[in-house]
Amino acid sequence: MAPKKILVLGADGQLGRALREAYAGARQVEFATRADVDLASPDSWPVRNWRNYSAIINAAAYTAVDTAETDQGRRDAWAVNVSAVTALAKVAAAHGITLVHVSSDYVFDGTEPLHREEEPFSPLGVYGQTKSAGDAVVSVVPQHYIVRTSWVVGDGGNFVRTMASLAERGISPSVVEDQVGRLTFTEDLAAGIRHLLDAGAPYGTYNLSNTGDPQSWAAIARRIYQLGGRDAGEVAGVSTADYFAGKEAAPRPLHSSFDLSKIEATGFSPAPIEERLKAYLGK
Image 1 (cartoon, rainbow, N blue to C red):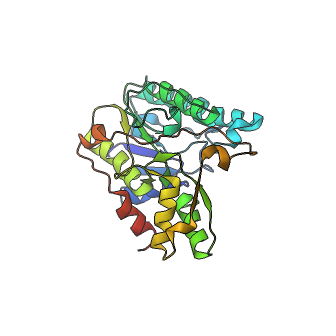
Image 2: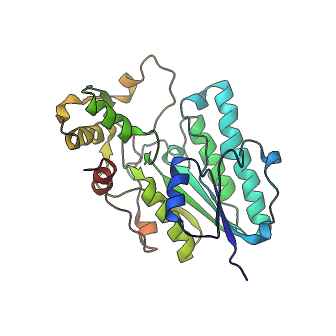
Image 3: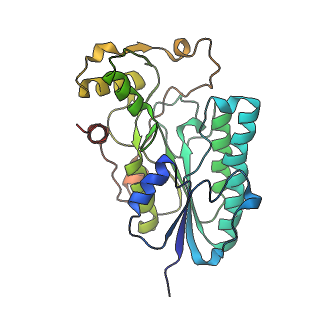
């Protein structure tokens, strides 16, 4: 009998592309892009024989944090992050499928310096509210993994790539100094998801980021400048309030660092941030 299949949704995003690498050569894994499955329109999803599937990995999400605060953005965020996730949860529960769902540090208000899996939701903005609601929905699926992550860096536009480009062009940026957390490279995020499924880890919520001392966005930017042969002093630190003054912006949690002991206890150890950062920048 052929092994049951795994369906990856959002296969054209940063995490989706990393999952393609993590499952390279695995013939039982199907990858669906937004063109294949529009999460905002569950009624249009292709018909599948769900009895042939063992897991669904939802690597898609609405992540436009600031746009989510607008009228249309609010509707779009709830459609993808809650309504579509609810539809996936119904499919998974009805057919005994494991649902893997990617969560965010934005489900918390950032007052705790280190977030544990059992911390109660306390979102500050619309995006965080939708991610919290999606987590709550997925948590009632009998077989589920909620993988909570932060500050994602992968193949696509992201903070590290932006700072490296500014450094190359000799631009001195102002970067937020009072938001502290850890980067998560999609290579490790994808590997952690595969590990949970392959190892048959206990179902539930797991924090996952790269390891190392928590740092501010400004500190990370200064390190990127150093690795690019620039002076770290070219990066000026500013407060979140000053950076977003006069702008339409969503509130951000000031602390986004996770306790990683739960996923490490399953046998998965994410790589250090410094190691991944150097490799990403080709240093």
